Length: 332
Image (tube, rainbow, N blue to C red; front, side, top):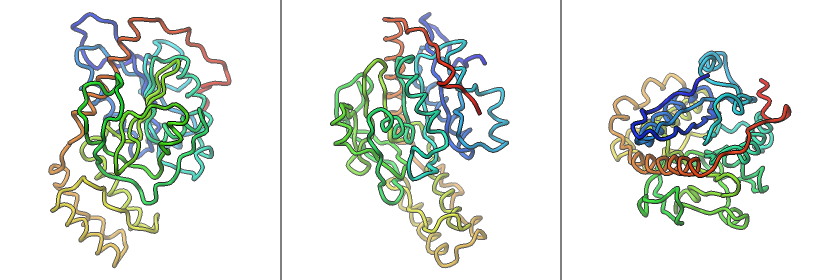
């Protein structure tokens, strides 16, 4: 499969190629691809950026998602073939197991960690992928945060680093997760904390060895309605009996009027938890009232990351990109 160009190349500079390994569940598979493509396009500036799409073995997929991926996505084994990637983005996935080592894609994901460390300039590990990579690299286990951490949180810059250069002292970022990584354990293992939130904990952190690994516990790629769609999905699971507790409303996301409407719906749902209430879920028109308050900082973050890829690519050539049969086999 040919990589997809995101923007013309008026500068005449060499293109950078980014691989996107999309591990999100079927319900968010297409929207995750769209979110990252949109963000990378906005952050590319005058750079020519090509994106290759990959799927990871072991991630459960229904027939509809598999059909969508055919012809658009490459098997992970193709990472080392055709046009090599300079940078890699590995998305999270919806947790299926209490122990991350029990996830069906654990072996494929840890193989990818080893490959990326040797064959990329830099890799972004997002959410659950960040937790898996850190556990594999340094044995740092995630820990539950209690009820789902969901909302748009203030994050403060905590280090000088090329990835956060030019960003304001404070910005906002969506978070949506059930687990976190302890900051003291990260610092003890020489990870550099780039930003943190008083309400959400560590936001961005990095480890620079042969490749720069950037770990993102939040979701700067989210479009403005992503948390609303997740909230509706979780409410639906409560009303249909798939979960026992009514989900908390995303924090610092809705305005007072929207929050009041959702609070009223919650009372009705707790009194009569039935799927018949779903048509009354107050979603209509609310997405148009939401503020994409994190977009500018997300664009700046990924512009810095692509600038880092371009600068490093111009200064050095990468080693030969080969994989042995037992690594990144791509078996489905």
